[in-house]
Image (cartoon, rainbow, N blue to C red; front, top):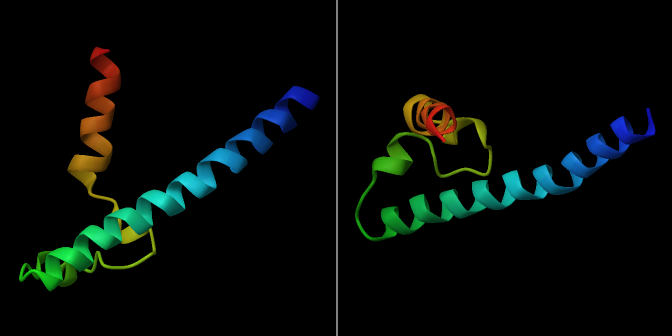
Length: 71
């Protein structure tokens, strides 16, 4: 049972900052694109630190599932 709690703690310690970093990184891409004249990310609501709007069903989920299937 101790190893289960250790695994959960390890996942939280690594996953939560990683999700925050990726979200902030991708939001910065959208912000920079908007400043350079491409309003696509702003129109899609992806210039935010909320990770939910950044999830693209095709790019985030389907491609990742395909990559893990063939590796």
